[in-house]
Image (cartoon, rainbow, N blue to C red; front, side):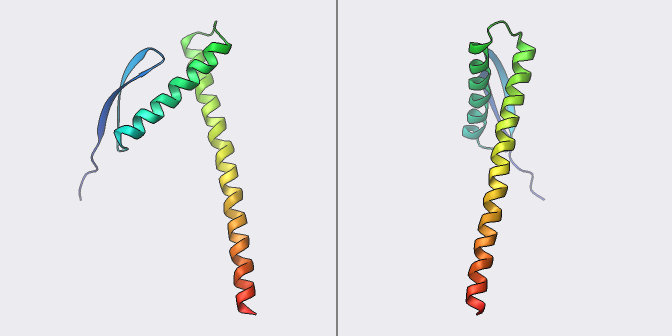
Length: 94
């Protein structure tokens, strides 16, 4: 069994450097780190008195909320596609 290659990359998130490692491409890892950095900066801009821990937790909650909303939309789109396929199949069977 071949082991998946792991990429290691240094990124900066909200002024702190982190070394991240994952099976995704370095471009993807940079993109994810950039998303987290952007979200933390956005929240900090509107809440300048938040300490780093609260800022990180709020960023995580906001990103999780966005993810859950997109996941729900995705599931709804899958249902619509399945219904459309079922209607097509029904027409073909006639």
